[in-house]
Image (cartoon, rainbow, N blue to C red):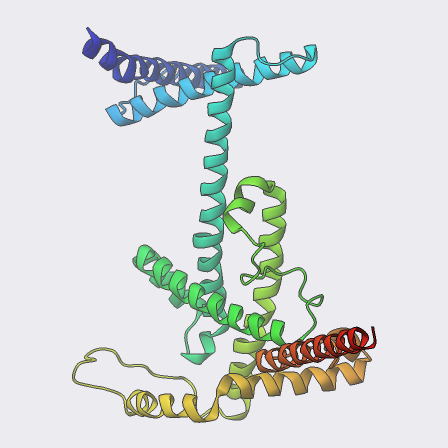
Length: 348
C-alpha cells in the first residue's frame, strides 16, 4: 500500500495534472485561433482551423505537473501571507508555517544559484567576448569570423571565452591588489577586498538583497570594460598604426609535439631567472607609484590618493625592534623603582 501511494503521489498525480494542463492549453490556443478567424470574417475553403492535439513526451508532461503543483502552492502561500499581514497575525496553521519556511529556503537557494551563475559563468563569458572583440586586430579577424565560429561550435566558443574571461579577471584582481598596497584604503572603498577578514562572500549572497548584487555586477562591468579597452584595444591599435609589420600574430598549433616555437622555448628558459632577479612586481609597483605621484601632483590629489609616511604601517622588523625597545625601557624603569625603594628602606 505504501509503495502504491508513493507512486501515485510522486508520479501519477503530477502526470495526470500535467496532461490536463497541456490539454487545456491546447484548447485555449484553438479557441483563440477560432475567435480570430471569426473576427476577421474571411471565408476560407477549409472553414475554421481544426483543433490540434500535440504530442508531448512523458518528461514534459511530468515537469508540467510538478510546475503546476509548485505554482499552486506558491499562490496559496502568498495569499495566506497577504491575508495574515492584513489581519496583523501570522500564518493560521503550523503546517502552513512549515510550508512558508520551506518556500523561503527554496527562494534563498534559487537566489544563490542565480547569483553564482551570473558572477561565475555569465560575467566571465561576457568579459571573454569583450576581450576577443578588443583583440580582433591582433590576429586579423573580424566579427563575422567569430559569429561563424559561434554558430558552428557554440559550446567550444563559450567555454574558450569563459576561460579567457576568468584569466582576465584574475589579472585585474592582481592589479587591484597592487593598487591597494600603494594608494590609501579609502580610494578603493567601492571594491571588495578578498584579504579582509570581515568579508564573507557566501554570507553576502544569502543576506544581501538582489538589487545590491546587481549594482555590484554593473560596477564591475563599468570597471572591466574601460580597463580592457585601455590595456588591450589601445595598444593593439597603436601598434597597427605605427608598427604594422608586427601584426597580425600567427600562432600555429597544428602539431605542437613536433613544432615548438622558439619564442615559447626562450620564454620558458629566461622567465624564471628574470622573475627572480628583476622582481617585476616591485618594479611594476614603483612604476605605478611614480605615475600616480605625477598624476596626483598635476591634479592636486596626491595627499588624498597616496599615503603619507606617517600613514604607512611599519614593517615587521621595525615593529619587533620597537617592542624590544619598549621592553628595555620598562625594565629600566622597574630597576629604577627598585633602587629608589632600597634607598628609602636604608634611610628608614
